[in-house]
Image (cartoon, rainbow, N blue to C red; front, side, top):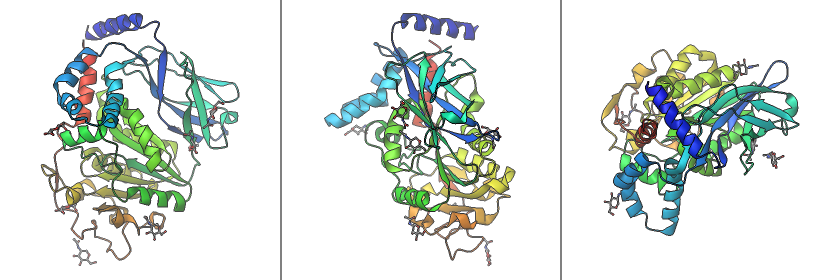
Length: 399
Ligand SMILES: *[C@@H]1O[C@H](CO)[C@@H](O)[C@H](O)[C@H]1NC(C)=O
Ligand SMILES: *[C@@H]1O[C@H](CO)[C@@H](O)[C@H](O)[C@H]1NC(C)=O
Ligand SMILES: *[C@@H]1O[C@H](CO)[C@@H](O)[C@H](O)[C@H]1NC(C)=O
Ligand SMILES: *[C@@H]1O[C@H](CO)[C@@H](O)[C@H](O)[C@H]1NC(C)=O
Ligand SMILES: *[C@@H]1O[C@H](CO)[C@@H](O)[C@H](O)[C@H]1NC(C)=O
Ligand SMILES: *[C@@H]1O[C@H](CO)[C@@H](O)[C@H](O)[C@H]1NC(C)=O
Ligand SMILES: *[C@@H]1O[C@H](CO)[C@@H](O)[C@H](O)[C@H]1NC(C)=O
């Protein structure tokens, strides 16, 4: 009954927007080469239309909640502009459902998605394309043919070699100073102020991209995909190019939301069975301290190192919830995981050596500070801003 109601509401929405042009948001994907020489590539993004009027529930939230304060606080013209740019997807994007999408790729090849888009407007499918579609031997460049986007933007899927090292990296609080446990800070620093890297990390990743053979960067964030533009504008100006995963918000697949990290790692593991993975997480995102050791226990041969940032070491205010890393990493060899406080703790580690501790650290030492990894590290992480936004987005569909 509810499904029918939603469907009807969305169809009415779609009718009223019939003349508005379609627009796409593309997220950089990744792919591999199949044994027959063809390319297996992940097409990933979403389709939407711009709405004139504000999304009602969201605008209520925005004019009465945190964001109202933010609007009041945005002082410089630069801040005001950034804020409105970032709010725009939440206020005006009408995600397009039931769309059957066809993409054009190089040399007259085209690819049609198997599934129509769901309520979240997303497409996310692996498809086989002939080797002739590959550009410069390294990537697939594609654009939507049907429905068409008059802007004709191009998307990029990087095709990685079968062997090498893949860095699977969380963004929030590993690469970007987000403080996801501190909502006012998170909101302010995500949508009002320019994004800031975690100190010392751009240097580390630049080093890795130069020194690790056949290195691939696969980033993930649990921020909703509606903030993708902001992340994509920023990420590659600071860190090496790579694929990105967002948290999906398909309300019909709660597992998807909860297991987003596990799914990301699993999918990369299946796509690159011969690659070696370095996983980067932190104590404020419990999904990394669960999904990464789980993967390591299931696929020891694919796991090189897991590095967990101890958030409490930098932010003592982060102190509500207990996480026992000893327990989380039970069964994962000591030399494969390490807890760091500052980026510099990682500078002297050579991940290709198979030892994930800096030189001179004993085999059983798990933290840079010399602390024993078994101590409880605290955090809060109850309702984050991302969760709040997702809940709000979902509420839209129950109108
Ligand atoms: C807005 O500014 C006021 C005073 O300058 C401050 O107390 C408040 O926390 C700010 N709100 C946000 C959401 O940044
Ligand atoms: C993608 O293809 C378009 C059209 O051929 C071209 O203009 C653009 O430069 C290409 N982008 C890349 C990154 O190859
Ligand atoms: C597309 O992907 C390739 C391979 O990763 C990369 O070198 C290139 O910079 C990307 N191009 C754009 C426009 O993002
Ligand atoms: C390529 O990736 C797909 C999953 O995306 C996987 O099923 C397939 O086995 C991979 N091919 C090779 C040759 O590793
Ligand atoms: C994290 O840092 C805090 C503060 O320095 C410390 O008390 C705690 O033991 C550390 N946790 C781990 C797992 O190293
Ligand atoms: C870069 O790597 C070299 C060794 O290859 C190391 O000495 C240096 O500390 C590293 N710097 C960073 C910022 O990772
Ligand atoms: C770590 O190993 C050393 C000897 O290599 C031992 O003396 C020490 O008790 C061990 N510490 C822990 C916490 O297991």
